Image (cartoon, rainbow over all chains, first blue to last red; front, side, top):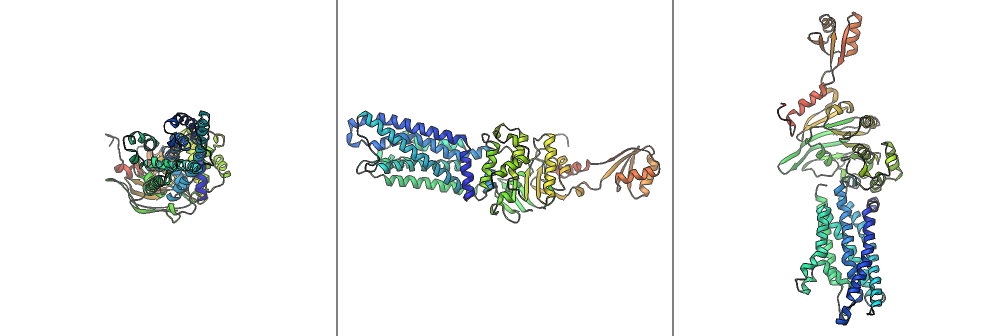
Length: 246
Length: 299
């Protein structure tokens, strides 16, 4: 298993797309964290009781950050199918479950580290924007804020695994990325047509509830729903990977 | 050693591989021959555990590939030379595989040297010619210094120098006591490389025999100034001779013996040629009925 992990780590590291993705992630997290926070600052005047500075900054960063991390997850396996290197990978690690576990572990850890850094970056830039705009802002020590930042990072880590599962299921970069963006971002347009309580049951929307810090809000049930969703897709991906011809 | 027992692969209504049984022994180069579409690659993919057999088994060194404790050190395979991420360097490609197989990095530079790619180690695989890709694929197969080598069409795209190199290379690997299974659709290539041949067509076994057995008795073409006299002499010595004009086709006697006999009697020879085309003919005879897409009109 250690060899399999080392191999997967090296595969990810020797692809330029990994580096590019992480650079783009950093830019998007900071950029959209700031932009969304700047736009949201105005909403404080209208409904001050619902103003959640931590959540607003984290949502902005994660909105686009999740596509980058998800695509990284998709590509980590579909690039192998596209190039045909999956056969060489399976020759070295013929036990499919082991190969799958090694890839999931490496993608999960990379996505977690990148996701946590991205969450922290968009939080900090967002609070700086709020402070400059003269509206209330949060500190990492405030009630629920550390959990919200950590939660946003975990959300992004799970999105990486979601991308990996979609990649394993579709074995195609185009199909995997299309599904991923539909599930995470495009679906929001459809969900707007539904009542808010119903929209909250969509897994990725539910998962993002982990960033709320308003008193009386419940961050965990939604996040649990999202986790179960990702776990189910991952299990389906493993099941098909073990049964299909490579 | 590779053992294939009643191996079958069904795709929809068609049988790509049909109850195939053969054993590949160590110490010799075994050619795996068949027309395009005969099921060679599907068979090799099942041996490598990539595709699941519909029925039957394929084992390497006594185990299914997926159950091998140390697969890269047991089997080295070249299935598709183009299966390299185009943006990875040759060295990184091999280092990824080495890491996955628990093989030390310095072995990567060794195998790159073995196949003559040390100068191109840091170039991206996407820039490689087909010949260079074949060499890289062979380097990957050699990473674990394996006992068993499985090479699918390794001479495809190689230049004459590369073909010459890989022939010698396969022979030396077999001489070291390794098992070498090499597929091809070209009988002419196998006739100079392989010791033993497994011929399949439409997924079925057509022949499993040594090269000498498949070719049948070798004949020698002899042309002489006085053919009738020579024919009588050779027949008296136990060879069978058929004559047409000045040409004799002799079986049951080698060219050296024929030459010596003629010299003793002072008979001038115009030509003395061992006939080597029969292997190709044997192959055409075997596979003639099983070509997936035959050329129209020729038959």
